[in-house]
Each structure stands twice: as C-alpha cells, then as structure tokens.
Length: 455
Image (cartoon, rainbow, N blue to C red; front, side, top):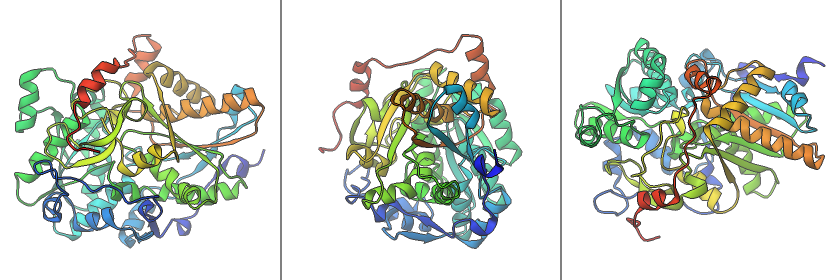
C-alpha cells in the first residue's frame, strides 16, 4: 500500500489564507446575545469590556472569508500547520468494515489539541489592541494550555481558572500552563465572589466550565488592562477553527474521496465546527448530501436531552444569555475525565444546525468511549484524549453500521487532541474503576427551570 493511501501532508504554502465564516451561509440569522440584567440585546460597549474589538467584529460579521493575519499564519506554520490527514486502515481491518475511516490530526502541536487555532489569533488581536492581561477558563486544560502558549508567544499575561475536577485529575496540564507563564487557579476559587459562593455551598465542589467562565469574567471586569478570551462556543472562535476543515477538503481530494459522514466530539462545539463547517457550506448550498454526527457525553447531554432556548452562558449569570442547546446553566456537570465536554450549552450556530436537521447528535458513556480509545490506540498507535474518544466511538459505530448494511461509505472524524496528559482516564478504565454518569431527566428539568426569555 502506498504512502499516499494512508496519509496526506500539505505544504506550508497550502495553509488557508482566510477563515471561513458559517454566518454567511446559515439558513437564518442567529438570535442576538442578551444582557444578563435587562434581557435586551447586549450593547457593543459591554462586550468590548470583555473581548478584542476584532473578535467582536468577526462575531457578528456575515463576510464569508476573513483574512488570516500573516503573523498568525506564520505562528500556525511554526506550530505544525497544515496538519496531516490519515486513514485508519488497521482500525478498518479490525472492525471488518467496508467503510473507509479517515481522521484529521489536531494532536501534534506543542499544546496537544486544536485549540491553538483560535488561541494564536485571539492573542494576536489582543496584543495589537494593547491588552496587558487575559483571563480565561479551561476544562480539561487543553484550551488553557493553548492560550498559555499563545500568550507567551505574543507577550501577554494570563490567568486561568481550571475546573477543579480536571485540576485534580490532570496536574500535568496545570504544570504545562505554568511552564508557559500562566497563573492557574482551581475553580471554584476563593479569588472571586462567584467562586466563594460555590465553595460556601460545597467546599469540595468539582467545578464546571460554567463556573470557571463566571470567575474569569468577574476577574476581567474588576481589573483594568484586562480582557477575556473564550475557547469555544462563540462564532469568532469557531471561525478561527475553520482552518481544519479547509485543509481537510484539500486532503480528501488527494485521496479522491468525499466524506459521507463527518464526525466530531462536542463540548462547546469548536473542534467539530472547525472540521465540519467548510463541508457544511456545501450542504447548506445544496451541493452535498454528507451527514454530520456530533458526539457528546451522556453525563452532559446538552443536545440529546437538553432544550434549544436562551440560557446564561455561565453558571454565575454574569455573562450574556445566548440561544443554544442547554441542560441548564445550573446543572452540576459530573466529574468525567472528558473535562472539555463538561459545559452545559453548545455553540449557537451549531445549535441552530442541529435544531434544523442539518446535523444530528449522539451521546455515549465514559466507559464506552474509553473502550473505543483503547481500540484506536491498539490499532493506530495513537492515544487520544477522552474528548476525542467520543468522536472515535461515533466513527466506529458508523463503520459497524456500514458493515451490517454492506455499504462502503467514507467517514472523516477530527482527532481533536492527544491523551498523553490524560492517562488517569485510561488507568481508571483498565482498573475497572471508571464511573458512568447519566442524569435523571428530572435533574435536567430542574436545572433548566423556567426559561428566562420566552422563545
């Protein structure tokens, strides 16, 4: 078998020069974010206190192509873009499937995930605008690691609020952030009013991305010279990630293949959007019949058991409300190892696409995704992050469906990060101590409560 049948590696000159913006092609305009106090569309001035001006411009722009700054492109190349696309031939053989399985490798950069694609862009925009310090949240630590690296490269101070469950489970991610120069705190922390509130209720609170967002936002607005940076959910973040899918389209053409299924894990939605949206553009324009499958944890089933409605973006009700799939900002996310998927909501654009049937979602337990990850490691040699194992599990299920139906379909998934700093999850799986969580529907109803905004 020739090398080109297994791997595609693009040259630096083939790195995209523009980001693709899904807002240009969505079937309707996204509902606006709302002020948490007035429940009216939030003012640009309020958002400027948090975000870089250029990020806000991209957030609302319907411009199809947004130029990538040359300094950001150079940083991408320095950190390993374009990334390879590979065929999982040994996995196919083990499954005995006629399907072809391809995966995009976002695990090879120094931060170990797809997150630098937006971290580098955001850090660049903030430096150009004179930001002195950034605050952010992180779940498993992949976003925190990426932004720590980007802040170091663009000479900006950074404070990270890391969900306590991941802070305890993944100490080496914290160390990596600190090596890059970031200040890292377990969330909920005693540093903020929001953090103290949750610690008073439960001194061993496992935290959540929603709480960590509240702390990062509070820290931002109470300190001059400080801005906030978000790693998922919002449109400018997903737009930056579109370099993944644009590269993948070229690489699939090299294989003379078009994917029948595009697959990714979803926490806030950025890694799957990064892969899927450049392909989704063709579907929205009636030029593709590909199916899009988003995989989430049963422990935080935002799109499979939640509601599509306005909800607070954070647990402390300090950030704007956005219309999205949510299990409720008050939902206490169980301490699963896939910390990057422990968010109560999903990206507004992805939520709209799921609601309108352009994309579907599935949910898996912690044990079954880790089983899929072990199979992938034993066949392809790559130890994937627990988050990415959700995508691997979904790809395997599709391949087995193709086997039952004797269909030679093509599956493409995003390998969003490596699991070399997540070995505790594998240790627990191998020791048979891994716990599955699946909420009682009544708990989701209680966490959602009455909608703050009539739909």
